[in-house]
Length: 328
Ligand code: TXA
Ligand code: MG
Image (cartoon, rainbow, N blue to C red; front, side, top):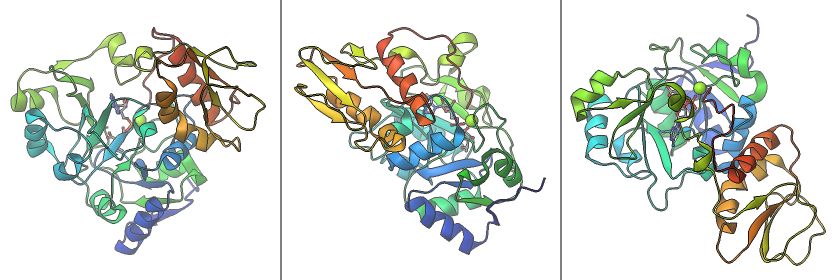
């Protein structure tokens, strides 16, 4: 393959630049022991929006925040005894743990698709660890492939799939495992595997006792994809042309609506990346009992607008929608 756009061998100088790019809100593809990740500053909503845009996924799925180890994870999520034991045994490694966000967690709401849980993982790869150190904070990274394509295990795969959507591809050779991490949900009393991967159910059970593996339909929708996770408490109307009494307005772009009880504007200039970055925080702010409902102005159904509209449709429907998939 000839497309080698932006591929650079992982020298210390290159990793340094990659860290600076991430701090500047840019996207950097980097190797981990499982697959290549599409890295973005996890605390920067617009950088996360750019990652979703690059993947071309018509839906916001929650992303894994990568950290050097348990101490940095503890700043983001509530680690219980099980999590401490698993981290001691399998980190750095191919185990992702889904845990409750800590109060004041700095990770952008968009990075976990508005959920109250956050997935964290410490990758077992020298390049990834050095990059995390230079980036200086959590790095959200989905697999570095376009939506629907297989996960990339070489820098060339990334270039073929994402091309110039990334500022840099750090080449650390072939990923040693070549299989994604195991996603383990520890947000409830029962430990549940949401996605099988590098660390097996038996390994986990040995460390913390019984673990259940979510299979079939539930597995497809399990990773934070169920519509009810997304529903607002207030009724929500989309594509509104007029306001009803008592409604709060979620605007997009310039508009002539007057007299809204409350208003947030996803992006006054009509920028979809900014809108995506604001979406979850603004829905949360308007979802209050003093309003009769949330009226949402039309958002163009193109690019990131498709994922924004998907999220808004889910907020209206308290049941799973058809086509709930977790193809990352
Ligand atoms: O090996 C890996 O995990 C790679 C490398 C780059 O670390 N990353 C990866 O990310 O595979 P991604 O985005 O392709 O898959 C992340 C999975 C998805 O199935 C997602 O739904 C699930 O983790 N996930 C993330 N946050 C979650 C949350 N808060 N609750 C439930 N599932 C979550
Ligand atoms: Mg994926």
